[in-house]
Amino acid sequence: MIIGPILRAEAGTSVDGIRALLAGGMPGVPRLNFATVDVRDLAVAHRLAMETPGAVNNRYICAGAAISFPELAQILAQRYRVPTRALPDSLVRFALVPAPQPA
Image (cartoon, rainbow, N blue to C red; front, side, top):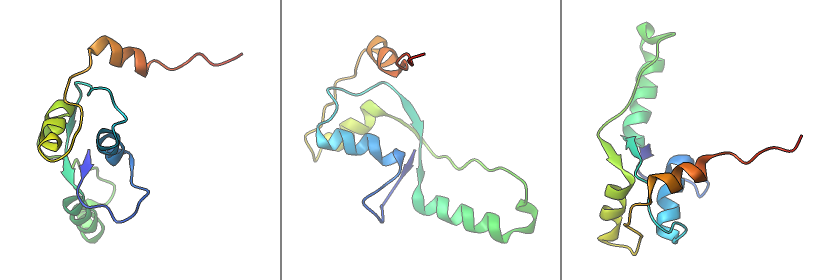
């Protein structure tokens, strides 16, 4: 999950979960964990990868501490009104199952 300051209103999917929490669009929070990285640290990593000759054709993982949605909700709840109740895993799995496509 990429976190940190955003420059435009149309942010990426990492911000969507936080935005949904703040907007009251979630009845509870899924018990999902994400490795986090600050967008500024990621920008530095991209720049170094472009400037370092030995970085060509390599892959790099930029990840920091993991955080769960319930933990994130608890942090946000200190300043904002957000749901902090964890959703049952079965409900989350049901919501993630794609709808059948017409033949």
